[in-house]
Image 1 (tube, protein in one colour):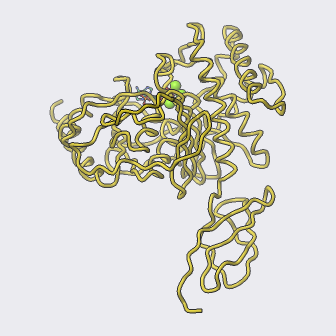
Image 2: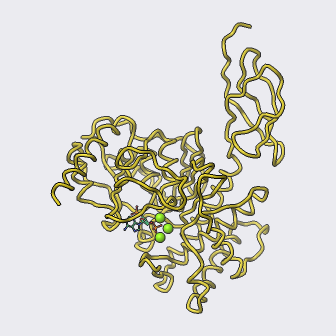
Image 3: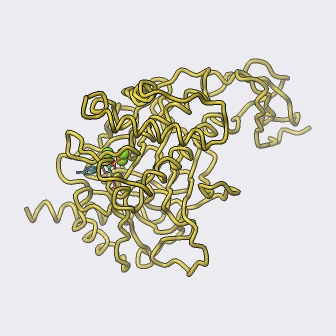
Length: 407
Ligand SMILES: Nc1ncnc2c1ncn2[C@@H]1O[C@H](COP(=O)(O)O)[C@@H](OP(=O)(O)O)[C@H]1O
Ligand SMILES: [Mg+2]
Ligand SMILES: [Mg+2]
Ligand SMILES: [Mg+2]
């Protein structure tokens, strides 16, 4: 055989919780079989027939992704039940005055519980938005009981008897498992149990956003968007006969981004918009003016030549919609002093980047998820495709400078 390289897609098959049998990418001698340890990533090569060069293995986070999809889907079911029957007493105010509901707590308890159950052999670390402080007070006891009922109802509706009924203490413990600080070492799950709580309370868009960090990098993400139509919501959408809502987006590093119906369906690969003419592009931004400067994004859009009005929706559903090309741009410019949290962007950013998009801060720097709970971003977060990014960055810079000089 000559010296040409035979490139084959690696295929991994789990043969035990710690080992995989893998067909590797080989040079010269076709396919060889090797055994790889799945403890730690990238895989360590233990034994292989020589000469074999392993370039990559496919789906190294396969079981984590399956667990994440299951957890987010169940949490979405709980949120849907709560949204249908939302009582005024289900909505509370946190110390920073932002809202939290029984569904935020229930979703966090459920995701934390499912991940631990599904991945028993892995050390469990979760960075999540909510904590149980208010539920442990006397005034929180009724709310805690209601959350526990929703969690148990949802587990029961799973149709499996494999979960025992959770007590209120179990629920508190599951919520507080989310106290990890994250960082650049090891693996950490990152959860926003309801992103877009204000949208959820209004009956609009929200998302359950779950991601996995490995050595500070996002390696997988799942976005459950219970109210997002399966058909496009972009400005230029074709008329669709489907009114079905509920989307599950997911992505693993290097494996592309996918969408399926939340109720279960075949998955389809998604790609960001290929538009290179800003005049044809539409852009997403927060529904809430308190979360993003609408006047700044409108000035950026004008400089760029965008003609369509902004599409304003809550939550990381914006990242999901963008990943399938519903719009071409997402602009987020918080008011001065606000610090972005990793759970508001981790899952969304990997879904969009695996769909071919780029997520950066306003200065063009990639987002750094390795610094703990907060993202240190310059001015704001912008998302678009590769072709539009250079002109978007120029428009952002110009608009920011103009705003600064007018103050
Ligand atoms: N003043 C502010 N500026 C920017 N973002 C804010 C904010 N106050 C809250 N947020 C964040 O904005 C998120 C919602 O984003 P969006 O506007 O895209 O729907 C909230 O997530 P939660 O709803 O999970 O708390 C919250 O983390
Ligand atoms: Mg919140
Ligand atoms: Mg959020
Ligand atoms: Mg939230």
